[in-house]
Length: 396
Ligand SMILES: Cc1ncc(COP(=O)(O)O)c(C=O)c1O
Image (cartoon, rainbow, N blue to C red; front, side, top):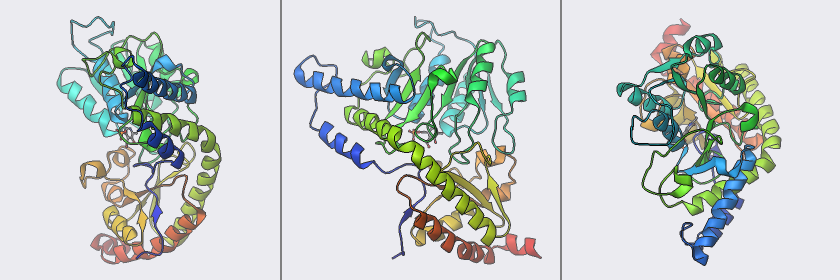
């Protein structure tokens, strides 16, 4: 049995907040369909609308600008696909036949949807980023043209934590007549997000990254922007997402954002301090490391580090034996051992990309957790490097 159980994988998913769990348990008693006109339906409708108000308030939107969807991935797929929909029958008013501009470090749900749309003839451009993972403004400026229909840039990166200057990028997109979407799945609940100040047209968020339930997300669609539905066949969510609402998930998401509003500021300061402790400790005790991501414009909870001459998966497994959960930079969602596309896009050499881990802290972590990782990691790296021909070769 390990000495301690430490969960450092909050960017993958978070545990349910106890208060979220409590309201979800209550909501389970209320089974009416929110579209039904009887009392049970009206009770469910009231719960859904209260959650919508909470989500809207949290990002400074109006409730009618929020639709609930099944996940962050669905929100992202919806924006890209609806804006590229070739249907000639639809009367939604979406401008058609224009291209998409995005970046090389987006989440796979943006990258793969973009590639799929490109195969179907939609012009797609993937912009480069610099060594810190910041979008190259010069390249972006050159790439956005009057043929660009949508610019989609993530607010904060899930692997390295780099935060983009969304306000400036949205302005640039608008100046060229394009709409702007941001995947804010990793940003909402970790940094303040104000859709009016940022002036974005679309924003995606997800419940399970903010101590809410899995399988629920929300999409902000600015008032007045022409849009329709990816999932058709029902009037739900203002006709923009068919399907009976996931009432319990929606209630959970509503409570999750309320709790974030109360806890986020203090937590950011606390996790930011521990991240510096972690970084300094690793630098002091382990040679040949490189830290990935932006040194300042970065999520306070996220530390991505490469260890020369080793495989991230080996580190992950040894840490797991000690009770510590982290993730590797590789495309773990697909079970692939390919090096991370995000690290490669920032110019990290393939070998170093293979040897990287992501530590993502959260609300339940303690300073003792950080010290425990610092106690265990040096010996693990030494052990894994001892077995590595690549590292032995390098040190000669
Ligand atoms: C940046 C980013 N976008 C989108 C998603 C997908 O969200 P969901 O798991 O809710 O589909 C994730 C999840 O890892 C993410 O980190």
